[in-house]
Image (cartoon, rainbow, N blue to C red):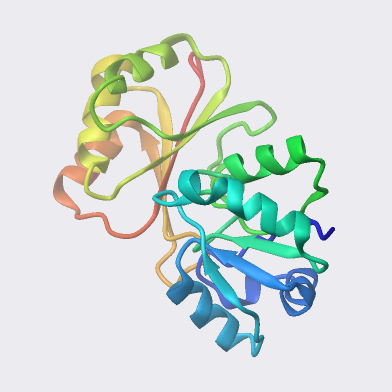
Amino acid sequence: MGKLILVPTPLGNLGDITLRSMDVLRSVEIVLAEDTRTSGKLLKLLEIQAPLRSFHMHNEHSLLERTVADIEQRVGDTALVCDAGTPGISDPGFLLVRACVVAGILVEALPGPTALIPAIVASGLPCDRFVFEGFIPQKKGRQSRMKEWQNETRTVVFYESPHRIERCMRELEEHLGPDRPACVVREISKMFETYHRGTIAELARYFASHEAKGEIVVVLGAAGN
């Protein structure tokens, strides 16, 4: 029986791929990919030939049982990749990992790119204790989630859509006040990587007049900072 290996992929800069990740992708029997077109381009750039099979949030429930059975029967290892970053971190992967653990299949996770870590360590906000919220709800539960942070004593990190970042800052100002420190990080490891630091009110004013594009991570200072 082979094992399941979670392989992080670059967020933007191809140089972020690790030597170990490339070795694994060359050696596995099959690669489960969130988007076979995106992963196919990456493998081509790395000059790696590996069979790709689709495994994403829209089919993981229906394919889960069969995928686990395939891994059990396969002699070689299986790699799981997402479009960018580490599988399972706001990307498909958790259900498969849990099912493989239950089935007694060895699961290995390689270290590598994930957006939340560089965002928090370069934000200028305390990173010794933090809570990661993933993507916060778009509608139902959004306001109550933000209200939970009113007395949060740890730094909060979450992902947000560029189309909602102005609204997000206004909502944070409403629920947490104008003076809470924050940092909005955009396009980590890509050509136009930017860090916007300031109070919630300052960031709300900035994004009211500046269109945001690309992948965004928000780092929110703890209550009392």
